[in-house]
Image (cartoon, rainbow, N blue to C red):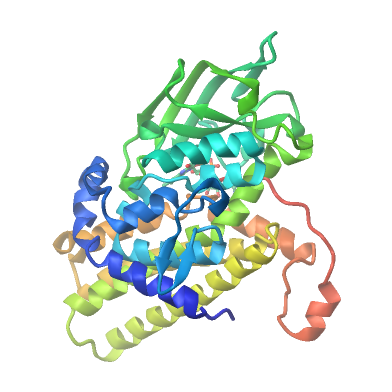
Length: 406
Ligand SMILES: Cc1cc2nc3c(=O)[nH]c(=O)nc-3n(C[C@H](O)[C@H](O)[C@H](O)COP(=O)(O)OP(=O)(O)OC[C@H]3O[C@@H](n4cnc5c(N)ncnc54)[C@H](O)[C@@H]3O)c2cc1C
């Protein structure tokens, strides 16, 4: 199991402190996700606005107890995301910042593209979007149809539709996945300035995780200069499908940590509002608390695996699968502990249960995580048995990454 060192404990303590005054915003952001614009000065929102931008692009680190934080490691992000999701997941997902798009840029962009993207992110808080899912179905992401059509001058035009893309309706920059040719190697990621002509994004109605403002996008011949093709300096195998599979591997422990944070928030709420629990109620509360702690260990373990080797996203699939289920079980269990009518009487708990449900879909559904995990097991990338014999027996056999969805 992974235990946090002094550095990460200092980060956790600071972010927990920041989070204390986010909780009162939860219902406000749930009603109106645009209300986050009034909180850009909050240290948590400021941290998220540049989290993940590497030092060499001019990112001033967060300095806590003599340590410097850039948000570039999966474990560091998991710590931040659990704490902020526990404080208010709505503000976390509503905040501007590079997140998924920033990870894709970090993995695939060339130097000029990184300077352009990170430079703009450092000038002022900007929302970004990572547009992969399409209306016909998000799980089979490699089957996407949005077209990237070459023009005679070497640039391209982007046409098609995307669906359920977080924050797209207010994003200024985006990474959009499109098809330049048939087949898996024909998928290409491009950087888009959403102010470019032909790009229209509209918010969709949401029940849970309303802060994320998931949106539909229609692109009608959006001009994409050749220098916005991500990974133009890389081989074709490293540009499209590889880019989103790797982006998810890197970010998946953070998504799992968000689910752990939602579950923890529900238990904290019960502890605050239920008074002393006895008998079966106490046992149920303790059992849910143990599940939260155990899942956090798994999330940290998966984040450490991803930090050690970016392609090791299989354990993170197990963590995301388990954490999404946990968030639903705990939020509904918490309502049960507060008695009949709890979701009506406690709007914050009702919001948590709605938010928890969205975690099933975000970054790939449970079934996609199961497929990824079992591919890792079959390929020998995840030990069936953590004992030394099993580790030796399965070591070194690689598994191809799966092209599942965000
Ligand atoms: C809050 C939120 C934020 C999101 N943010 C983004 C974002 O920023 N960018 C983006 O591109 N997308 C985003 N999404 C979309 C998300 O990635 C998709 O919802 C998800 O990939 C599932 O796709 P779908 O909704 O089209 O469901 P489908 O793919 O149609 O799946 C429907 C059901 O069928 C099951 N299923 C599908 N294929 C298989 C299979 N082969 N085997 C077994 N079961 C299968 C699924 O598990 C699911 O239960 C977001 C979604 C949510 C809820």
